[in-house]
Length: 162
Length: 441
Image (tube, rainbow over all chains, first blue to last red; front, side, top):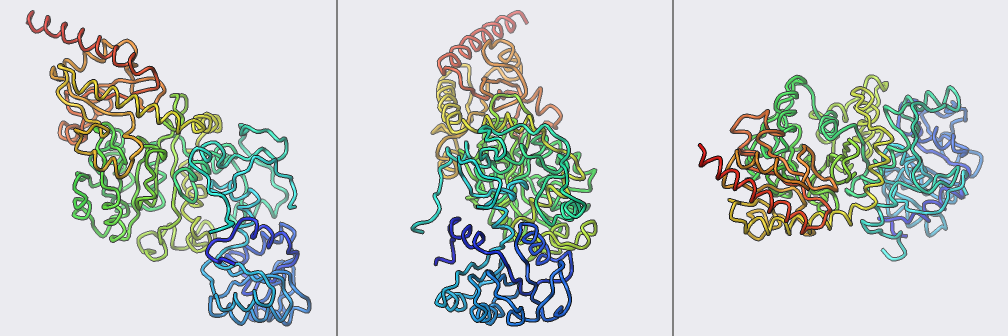
């Protein structure tokens, strides 16, 4: 996978195949970027699984917070990493161990060694991107803010995900 | 990369960018959402929209679906991340600077600008506590000399109106970036089809969409396009609006939460919210219609302008012609570097008969419209010293290339020979009348 330029089809498929998203580093503060992303994904129908050792045992967006991916008690489809690039390494290993289908690192987060390990284990990897931006870009909502989506099509979009 | 997404050409983007078939009805042309407000799903959705937690429409002062198509298309054409469409080109200049400025802040701007911009920046900006320092842009180092700790942007026109001056964009961009401030370029006269300032280091591009972009003189409008690349957080002390917590958004920091989308998000969520200079959906729709043919029109505008400029250069009543597309132009080199497809269609020439001859010419032409606008399908003629640049001092007029003898043409899409014939007739008539009048005096 070329991690400098993902195709829209690849991103669409990573987002489209996930139903649950573990967000590692999700803040309990409603005005933080991670909370914005979690709330958006939840509104789009994803089951958001908060992971944050500082908030373990509590609740964010109505969901119980796990201290680590291993403590989730279920297998997330997608693991979204809201931690720095170094911390993304062990989190990717946890995602592999947990049986996740994909690892997603937020804008500014990139760990190529971790991506190699995850891909070798059969996971798909997205780095240095935001799932909220990519979802809204591919499905038309980012355009509402005047942003260039890069999407050109003369097809009539159906009013559902797939 | 192999197997990547298609990279579409300018002509394709001019028609398709931002405008997918409307999903509910299948309508192929962009609908005109002549609409003020938008229903919330529920109270939580409303709160999320007001908190900028998700994209969505609240009220058309902030964003409108038809206007958003125009914003996205212009962002695509200029090579930016996002766009903000506003009521007029003048509003675009205020909106472009609003996220950057505070009382006491300065910009360094070219002294070769549209007269209305010199007035806006030199006089009205003072009421905001903003100072514009004007410099001759023909030596890029003049911008560096005018920098101060309060400078927040450098500002030029890609082709200056009316003088046809083309500046060294890359050199000025480098000075801006060394100083840690964005480079703002007004691209109205070139349009992105001739020149994409972002490719040469601009951070923010403003356009008056009233001109070539809409193309038929129907609709006022302006737009601001942002690259998303300027590192606001690295210069947080200079740009607190973007790089420090915003109290009305509960301490959210735009550059942190929105990253590359911060400037354009701020332009909607704060600048349009509070300044209210929103573009009307009908105007956006007419401008979108114009954009579909922008490449074709600009080709013809440039070809016609070159034909008229070449003919004028050989006319005995004409003292000089300033068109960067002519080999005689001192700006020919910069034109070929920054806008090789053409030099636009607005240029000036000087009459041997001076101010009087200029006044007579604009009154004698038949096909050229004597009015204050540029970038219309119709050819336009103006005597700047007595109109658009009238409110300036003599020194400002001369510096802006709008001296007493100067005639400005905006060459349209008519048959080039008809335009030349009209000017020929008018130059003969005005020169004969001038001779008679001179003899009588």
